[in-house]
Image (tube, rainbow, N blue to C red):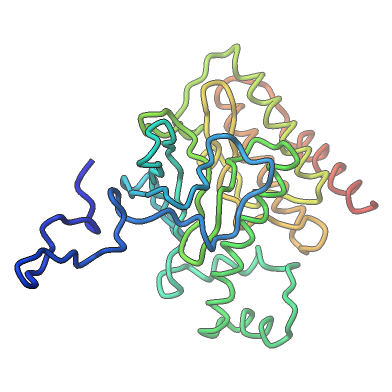
Amino acid sequence: MSRSTFESHDDTLSSGGHAVDTEPDAPPEGERWSTWDGASHGPTPRPDWVITDLGAVESDLGILKTGKEADVHLVRRWLPADRERDVLMAAKRYRSTDHRLFHRDAGYLEGRRVRKSREMRAMRTRTAFGKQMISGMWAFTEFDTLTTLWREGLPVPYPVQLTESEMLMEFIGTPDGAAAPRLVQARPAPDLLADLFEQLRSALTSLAELGWAHGDLSPYNVLLDGERLVIIDWPQVVDVIGNPHGFDFLERDARNMTDWFTRRGLEVEAEEFFGDLAAAAAGAARW
């Protein structure tokens, strides 16, 4: 690992013949102290690998994925006093209001509510304040959604914490930092395809029973972790009943995924799959 930009043993001043540390609050190693303190935290019980010690330190190891709304970085958190406490996480950092494509937000935001009518008007008219509201809602919605889905046992990354600048979540990949491939990149064996589709069916049915659709589901935001599917990218989650286009989003999710499985040689029917999901969502609405 490269030497931290926040740590320098040479940054001293001479004062009466003695060296003076110019950064007494810098961590002993790494780029920053753990950001756990002051953040919103993920659901309990937490996985054993989550490091909550305030004496932990963190370093950014580089970008895993770039996107239109956010970039995902690989972050290492470890405890200098206990070398066995060392974990990799994915850090999602949303772009500033000046670098987001807000025209993509409109359809997804329908059906979501905020407390104050002033805030709703600002979001609708895309004022500077409204864009800030949307950015904050985007990050909070993804964290809150992951928290709910994790508790429900769906195949999603564990949401570690949320601050104003980033969301830290479980890194899906190998211990040496190699990210799990996206499904679009994978070429699973024919005997695995049917099992993967059943994993997808189970996850999306459970999601529909909560009254939700992913909203932007495709093989690009499904990871293949060994023989396990993990669904990522949840900021645009859609209330199927509350959003006037909710069933359209649900149908698009179903068709995007069945098309991929069909191209790989598995016989699946998009209309039937969507019908089952729509029935599950409608059932959730009756409750």
